[in-house]
Image (tube, rainbow, N blue to C red):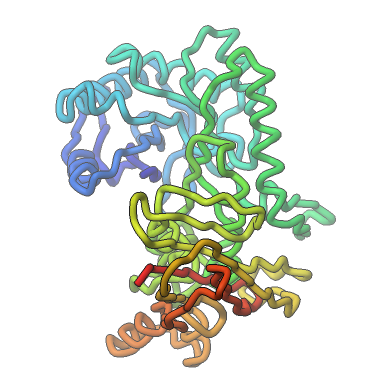
Length: 445
């Protein structure tokens, strides 16, 4: 799990006394990492933001006012990184920390997150990676953690020229950043152009080619942020049924292309622009701030229920898995429909009314099969749409929260027994509306 702000002043990690002597405190860091490890989660450590006492300017970002400057003293920054890493090794053990990843900064190619230049970021990376490796050379460190797939060739060229260790490449993308250009037609107005879900794979392939052409052609590639849209107001892009099928199609496209692909984020408790003003505001989570699961949360939940053995098909929107040594199949099928018109500020996008007829045939079936099928679409398993139908109340009462949680549960819409025909074949068919998905379990009786 990756998140921002381990060095934010609210964490209390670094300050200086009146004589400029560094003072370190890791109590809050311990609370965070102890909790993650208790859940079986390994931290993906983002080294940032800049402690105020080390900041070289007063630039800050978002409502939590994170300092985004280069350090005013690189030696003190290096000592912070070494002391921090040493503390982790002492508390959690060398073998454990050697399994983590350390990423230097967040999106330094964006002015809001980094007030320095590209060259200053490269210096920060070199100082940081050497400080980590001084504690244990096995700890994996990488970057450039950029938005929009940028700076990868330049970053790898710098690492080669500076002999700076690098263990992986990381970047971020959104369909509305890598697939959406910001075209300025006036100083006040930005026009965004949607290029479609397949562009997500195109950009990753391009970065893979850049790595292959570098001095480090075998480096792992991690995308530590991705989602449909970076705009906080984009409810349709991040809260609706479209988000679920977009995620499934993108994950399917990325299979085998990279080493990790991290959805941004888990919860809507996400306050870059302040707390959410309503239950659904277009923030990034799999569930909203009340814990109401979004359709995209179902997509990831159903993926987690698939068996490890896949039966390969030619259908790009179908995953068929088999229970090892057992008698059950689990399938996930969806119907992703691309928008024809896009609104990023809360309104629905224009989606063609294109249903999909799903027809699945199983051969060699010798007995009865129990079929159970769960559905998520505009009217099923969709707390966001249920909230809209309820009039979009800004503040939910406890009974309303419970009602929406129930509405957000994916219903089982089919539960029946299928019998094979004389040729030991079982056939099933059903329709999926636009941006709908179904999870299916088949069990021999």
